[in-house]
Image (cartoon, rainbow, N blue to C red; front, side):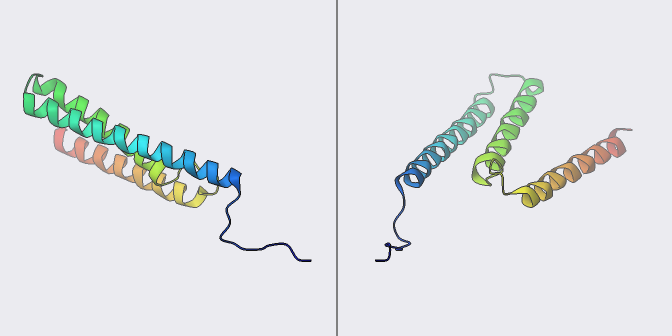
Length: 107
């Protein structure tokens, strides 16, 4: 006889893999919320000097962008070569633009 080819069935391995992926995404989302609250807390409290607040905020923002790319845009997956290339190319163009504007402004 023929095998059951119902595509609605998910094998146990894939189900466990999906569960782990969702767990990682929820943890990452919670960390991003915590980083946002830390950033708001630093700014609202005024406990740190402005000279230290801005680098801390930039570091927290870069960490959140890395989480966005790695987990929510699936840059960790092997079959996302071209989208990863385009995104990293866009990041590189943004860095060059900001560097150029910085040189023009402060030269």
